[in-house]
Length: 483
Length: 107
Image 1 (cartoon, rainbow over the protein chains, first blue to last red):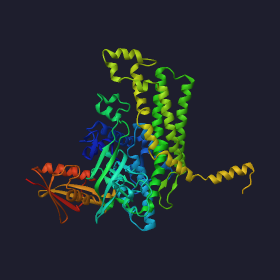
Image 2 (image 1 turned 90 degrees about the vertical axis):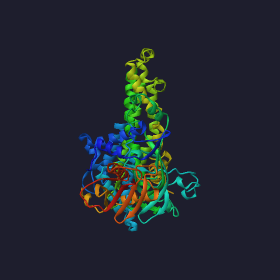
Image 3 (image 1 turned 180 degrees about the vertical axis):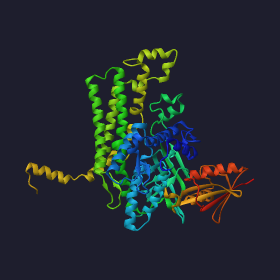
Image 4 (image 1 turned 45 degrees about the vertical axis):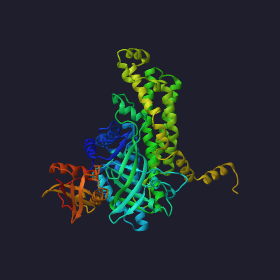
């Protein structure tokens, strides 16, 4: 079996029993808890897309290891077309579920590992790439949902990992054994790890000589003893947990982005799943290769899918209130499209200008500059987009009563009188709730930080841009002599 | 897929009583992961509470695992099915097992 159906994924999740804590209690079955279920249902929908012949080009690829059809979420990009389809997948999945494709980080992590393990073997004569390919072939053959864990808890940012008072703020080695390694530490903000069969763990950033204990990359099984997932919890979590009907929520089935803090308490990782062990010199490039892929996909395409949904909701809100023909409303909607499509254009450019990295590896990664530009652009643009959605959606977006109150025998008629406009009150409230989810929810800050906070893109753009060449061009045109 | 014969994979058989009741396929190192959980952490994957294992010891070609309490063969197999899937092994048939987990009930 190389392609799991949505149902087969759900059946496989029923057998998983990770140690998950959510909102004050331990979760007994991911599908039995309303919050964790929303994450699992989003993943199931992503599996479902690969079943639809309409999306085959985007969602299905041919494994470079076996030639078999595989889910693109487990594909290593081998050419420009693969990169282009990868960013199209990010767009399609976010348009479909309005939250994370929870296999996305894992996909970008495995592409970085394919590239960097090849380089490690070439330079050092190690066998990491062979080992990684065996793991990947296994993941592809079983169509595993793979998430990615990059961000360490980090502790005091002034201190290096080895200087922290609490060593567990970074994933680190506890014991090297004949059959594997034992690790402990904490990864934070891990999207969808709870409902993934496996998680790929990468170091959180560049490391120096002397920090070998932190230079680790490995794949960990969902239910590995010693691994605890502590779910995020906020007002939207409580709303889902305690609402009478989930249909009332802004994104009823798939919810907000669900992340967890992953606590590794002496977790055993067999050597067959270890892809980097102590090679500090390669940590920076492993993470930066992940970042360039993720900035194209998460920044330049995924958030554009979100923007498409927000724009759709905003146009509906304008129509339902009868302001859709007002010139300044139309102008603001066009601005939303401009901001969104500019980011998508950067993602497409990042794919089209992608290249093999390193030469000879066969692994294609997106163009760095365009990928970073895509992410930085949407980080800022997204706030503008949700500002306009809130503007056009009106105060109702945050002042609306409960949709279900429309059915109340006493207040229902009052509310219908109050909120019927160019469309019935129920439609207006439904759209207002949808826009509330986007404009007053988690996505603004999530988009800002996802794939790295904007300062990291600014740094990369400053490194990647040849300012001297630009100065030279300007001087030449001005007729200014070179000094 | 050619994976059935891939040397990178491990076949783990579950023996209850005199019979092999199930066969699971996992990536190399799956058995080592299972053994570490049982011997070092005293936990069966997928079951977070301690006390489920009465005895676990390595023996030639596998592991002897005695679960606490009184359990039927069906119940033992249900525990092992959850345990092995949570450590990344899936039901598989047709190949010779590299490791055997011999599972018993204490009572």
